[in-house]
Length: 313
Length: 294
Image (cartoon, rainbow over all chains, first blue to last red; front, side):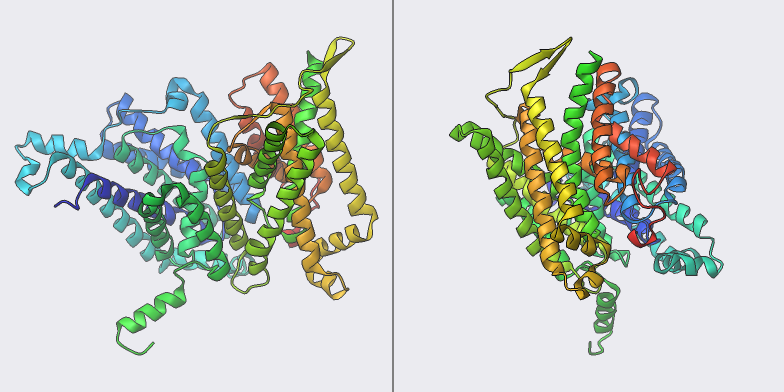
């Protein structure tokens, strides 16, 4: 069980949180809206969950739910005025929302703890270990040390959340809502002429994206037990966008793959850590030059599916 | 006090305007937001700093060095990160956004590797020279910054408005294909635009070093974000919008810090754009319903 060390599990956990974030931007992108505010929504979710559990002793699942819902509500508030904007205008206005939110987090010290952030947030794995310990369970009975057990528990919870999220949105994309999204993305006026309530679906997609970001943020808070405004900067917003664009924004597996791959690459390059972000930047440029639609596109998925069935590709 | 703040604000604002002009030129011609502009600007600041502090050369040499390096970076950026994407089917407007983000990550970390994370002192020999006009103290540095910025803006406006190549550039901005059909070498114009915009970033870098007396590898990001906010505020692709937006932001930041709270200084730019986008989405000087621009 040597490979099952907390470090590997932590990287895997971040992969999963990032995958949810990747899906969050994919959902808004699937109606053709580019939002760079997801880092801000993630911050809302993370801070809500963190403050509820540290200051009001709210149970973790309730806090995560509250954080997600609050972020989703903020998404509606931002999404309605954002309807007037498109393309780069929307991108930069939402980026602005994130920056303003970060300034609020830093300056509203009485609530948020300022630039220092919130520490000692109950960690999911530890809470589960304590709960199980009270019932006479010990991780040694599974051949695990307690820190292995904690990391494993976090990983499994996140895995479940990610699978549920992806399954939900995969199902959604084949539903009436998903078809409406696709129609809006292809041509807004045509969709509107065909009787699709464009405004409703665009705001819906925007707030779904915000809710998912908040969800990921709340999970992040309870997985790392520490949040600060520095976790929700411009860099995070760009990182989330890159997951979707690198992995491919035309299918839900694209951002999931992008998130997983781009989380592992910098870790795998740790041995040449001085150069890893230089390589990361280079990778993005090369990717856009040689495969601008992202790694995973519907054509690739079709080919994979066909070869999986044994017919010649 | 009020007048001094006014002067500080105008000095800061004119630097913002120069940074924003770099974005607006590239956006006007290519409809691309060059996310690497902030980092190119930062390299200009570092080159200027190295020349001034390591060789003790006078300031004009620092400007020339910064211009040379950032112009070369603009050339490379256009050649390797923008041109391959141009006119490719399947390459959405997101592709160029991401590739310039890639370049900005690359440059930020190259700068971190070379210069480290700390602050570097940017010393100018005349930093402390000031003179009193009535009740106000004006520093020579501020005068120099203001003069250079005004010259640069006037030069750019003249070039765009009055010269043959400026006209070709505006034609390219108006419509790439038509300009090409009418005999404008559009590839050359695009390269020229990116190079000029980058060189202006380099100049702005040296000016920032002069104004603040220190630089670090984060200034590219903070200046870059403000530059972005300014071009949205002033109207995408509008040269005068960038100038006015820069001055307005410089003044409002200075006054908010002087008479209000400094904590929200960096958020002002974004509060301003959120407000303007809700009232007048095309920006202060943007063309009315610019469907084609979107």
